[in-house]
Length: 150
Image (cartoon, rainbow, N blue to C red; front, side):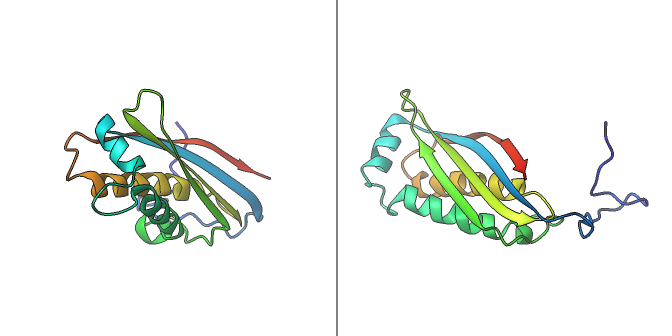
């Protein structure tokens, strides 16, 4: 197992010093899903959830969360991301929404936490907006799909 980068020589939590690293174009893609009842998905797609347009709210919440990741995760660097995109897909099974988020930046450190945070907050927003009509929703399988640098 490799050394934990967020632990200093004394075993204490520490922010990684990236000041000596070169600025590079970086992108990360994350995905996750929220499992729900088919009837809930129909309500979402027809914009009949009482709280409003679920997917529009989830997309905006996800982008805002990506921009604020450094404020939410204690040892993350605050990053001025240059782009964040959030998409929703509906499999033929009609029992889930697959959430995908990408984040881009020109920086000295990666942007994967921002992509993961975007997916997480999108799922939480869907959950919050639909909890009155679906008590069985489950947020699952949040994971990093890819990260690249050039």
